[in-house]
Length: 69
Image 1 (cartoon, rainbow, N blue to C red):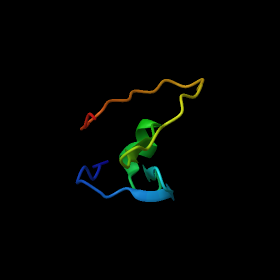
Image 2 (tube, one colour):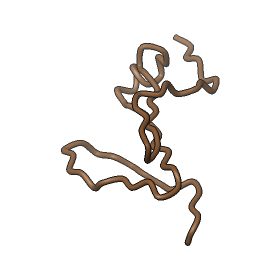
Image 3 (tube, helix red, strand yellow):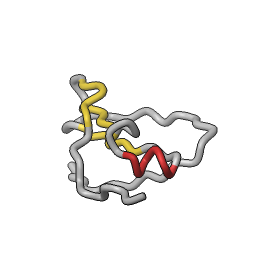
């Protein structure tokens, strides 16, 4: 079976004053479904803040761009 690995845009799940949360859905990307994984992006606006949270599943997070002061 051949998987489509072309880039796809994420769907906006939630947006507010501090930023937005985007997710790639397994229904639209078979590689996520086949790999049993999820993918999401958190885009914070200036002065936006993400609260720490507990999760019982493994996650990887990294910062793509940051501005200071």
